[in-house]
Image (cartoon, rainbow over the protein chains, first blue to last red):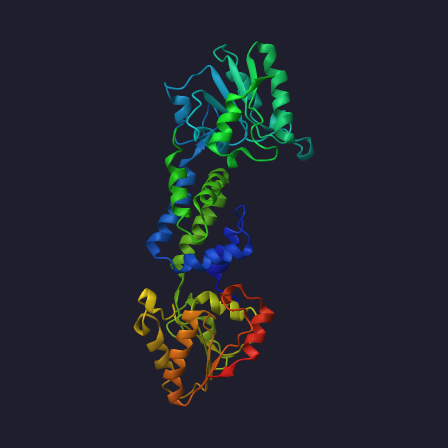
Length: 198
Length: 198
């Protein structure tokens, strides 16, 4: 006998998630099938209503509930500094260290000739637009310390320095190859303080 | 800045699932937040509508969409054999070997004095009721080869043998301590064929 259709459908959907293989999806589906109805409703609602409520901040590209994210909307943040990261999850990683008071810019990708991702495919123009009014004095490049991240940082530095804005690169306190999101707070904090002008 | 509420809620719900820690839940939530709306709707619908569609078979206790599961309802299965397992996922594990043609009985637990689980807390009475009409000639005890599984098998053997029904225990082809659901098909198949009368 095959397993019943609702379970098969759960397994299919769950195994689309990153890091969830067929065996894990199977285990999760069987667990969910035994969960109280209310708990499954809460889980499904958290995913679907949550996803519906989230869009990208019109200024920085971070996840936001309103049109502008809490960080861009805050009067407490220094608007003279912009920290450039690849993904929204990297903003979360930076915020965890409770140290940085400037703003962010989320590129939603990094340059990758291998994968055909060029400057127009990520949010570089949006960053350049934000730098036009002269209020920003420093752009901190916090893309990951891998080939694409380094290439993107170099590209952005060449673009931004002619505007007379200080461009810094987050220090290589993190071991090469480790994604920003997996770094602990202390390492990230050291990498920030050791940043150097490009 | 804290992360936005929809993300926090996703993380909370996801980390209730078995084997999903806070870091994994975080990673999944950030991924889901970036997924196309339609894909998240499909995922949430698979979980919620799937869960709503599933109940326990009125006969064997396995997952079912109808009142009676496909296995109990099938004319192809031998109704003289009942294989007793702990969980619905164990039925799936047994069915994967495409070898066994009898019926199942899902206990939904095993005896565990330590956790206060006695004979009335699992589906033992339902099993005894199925054995009353004399159509069953063999009960195969396929609870896991751990302390609770062995204790449950011994308890059931004592209860069923006086009815004149052959009681067998799945062979210990599986290494002690390995849950049924993680066994490969060959091992399971060997364990079935090597079963001995209790």
